[in-house]
Length: 416
Image 1 (cartoon, helix red, strand yellow):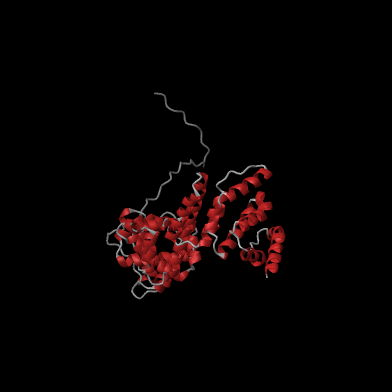
Image 2 (cartoon, rainbow, N blue to C red):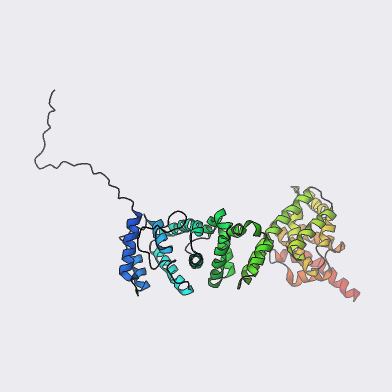
């Protein structure tokens, strides 16, 4: 066998060897032990100061928070690593004395623990996504937590929401049979709202829930036999300090009902449903959900106008609109008996015509038609013209109605 010929090598030349990447072993237990040991040393010993522990967590740049983000929040919330189902991994390890579950069940104490999380998330921006992901997991484990810890978790979650550290999306993770059927999801959101409504306005809370669609799915966190609007409002009414929440939820559900009713009216008109049947259907929904007459009026006009495919030629469209509206006078008259409802109709028509400007020139003709049909009264028309009109296209609509309004005023003067 021929020997390989050696190539000449310059004296002093170093031969480079390929470096092998050695991946560090993933060791959640080791991370936990080091972190909790540091917390205990910094301020977690008996009589220790939570401020010292918080500073250690925030300034511990040697800890790999990015890699062990899930374990970090387990330690901050539960005090140790969470096993599937919600129990803490039992291996004799020490617990984080500054965790949510180890805190006193007290407003100020839990607020301070939430502030620890806020400080970490602000220092390490990448933890914000991890925080939300961790809560998605943790809220699925409510069955594995003690009742007192569920209350603490709910209050801490309220503080985190009010601080704007995460969205309300994790609440939907409780929509599982094991958590909902036992009533734990309902218990959790009750404690959550009890604290959150003290920290934020109902408008801010409603906005946060709406951004993630939780407002429309809140009923899914109630047991199957308690998901009706009446049952949920009744439950909230039984809770102390839930008045604003009840008002918000009732308004939310009513808004959804009105949206559905508007679509239903349009469809019934497309199907040429007789006016009496249409009136009866709307009356039934109105009474069931206690919708004010003026609110029905407000949704009725866009429903009527949305039931037609309009002609593209302006002249033909005007005649088409007048015929269509005339065919629905009985329906309109049923929901415009009060001056308030009549003014709402005029304002709704005005804003509709402003957006759909093909109808701009026939606003006054609609009003005259309704006046002759006794759908609009003099008082409502004069009130709309003087003060109750919309600001949208105000000068154009008022100018178009001047002749009609002046005629009404002169007729009123002559009658006097």
